[in-house]
Length: 421
Image (cartoon, rainbow, N blue to C red):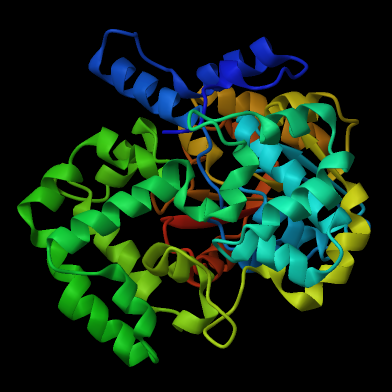
């Protein structure tokens, strides 16, 4: 990886404490045990940029949250796409948290691009169109002077090749990061088996998409090398799947390999949504976004949302800290919407109780919590304190309906909880 480890980044307030929090979230076994070694390898990989693009469908999130102008949202940042999509609904405030400093820097940069680049087309060129050298000129002229000092040091820091980190935007940032490199490796393995995944972008109908999957993609999961790879936890770290999530996925199959689960989810990505409406499929198969006339851009880059996002960037506050720690600083009853992504899959019961104690304390009347899980069922059943769980209503039917519409297709379940009246 070209991303530097956490210790090489520009200083941030509370750095050592945040690094300790990241380790606490990941490490649950003794260092020299098999499970402990696996967790530490994942932690090493996760310390760099993981997600240039977030892989949770913001359209599903926004429908579940039914955002209103008075709402205060707390969300995990990841690649930053979804917090910008939420911002287009003009909520009162969005607090973004992340323990990964690379994600924090990316979230702050994306906000600055909307605030300071001259027009919507400039933002799209910077974030959606690869191989544009003019992006560096735009950064230097319009954006860099307005960044906070630590974010600017991050993006202007040198990589091992001597280039500034910001130079990734004159190439294709979506081919970088842990997930981007994993997708690239997956393409290589597929080509070695006679399949070029980019051919999928030629499909012009759901029927053609189905044929491509059945005839060309599905047979790959019967290949011995694929079954071997998908039986090893470390082989899927590039998807951002930590050891704990691998175990959840393996529980859905009667074999040690999670190939059947991955096949099912890839089928949903390929066959359940028209390609022109699914930018997740474009990234997975084309390693880029659709060009004009080919399909849609991510929600936050769509032109009809630009004016609202640009006007309201000051309502977003990005924090390098944990969800629980941020909530501990907030007043009781002050948060309306909580977005946990899949972070709870990593947590021990005592961590879940600490998180939900703060969620429950800070939840405003009518508050909603949304999250996703690797497996199909909610992570809370049997793990969260019954006293805390009893304060919330699980909207099971709505959760299943929303999960079916999630275009990213990589999760087993979407879950919506509503505070008891």
